[in-house]
Figure 1 (cartoon, helix red, strand yellow):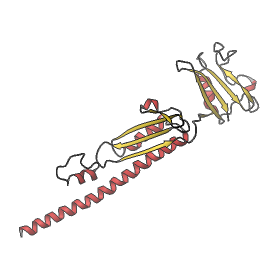
Figure 2: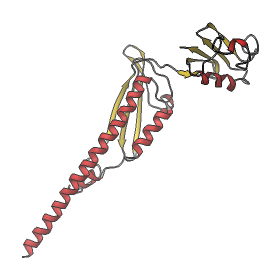
Figure 3: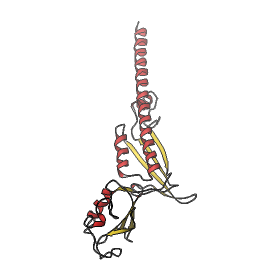
Length: 242
């Protein structure tokens, strides 16, 4: 009688264990697929935009935080010439840095904790240690840069920058429109590129209406290029209408 009771109890416990194991397995796999998808989407954006922005990094952090304590490891292989790369691991050398065709950025995500499925599975192994059966969720994707970074902004961003740097004598702004291929400088005459003081946009006829050669369309697309001083500070911001 006692043997039958013991057998029944063991059978119930084993069945319960198997049920929980199956449930936790599917939860584990669902999290694995989700984390992998998030990582893939981020890598795809980097591949086509040629930059890993701070906002995109924050999105990655916030998204995977919902599924565990993940460590994000980055590796940037920056092509110097064909077959030769400089490798960077520091986030400050990677985030918000324009990339070029041939560069490769690898994103490695790994959960620092074991899932319930792993813990339950490991608990059945004699001499159990937390690292005995390490099936922690991880995802690795490499973004291969397919085009050079292009910094496109809108016309209202150009106008905002003219206002922003109007009192900064160290910065000049050159705006090239489709009607004026030579462009027009904005800034202080003390700047090496600026002949006369011109810190305000919209105060001359050439900047009025749709016919002014230096008129900046609010929703127009402008390519932004930056020239810096030897110390890294901005010297010139060049905007070219596309």
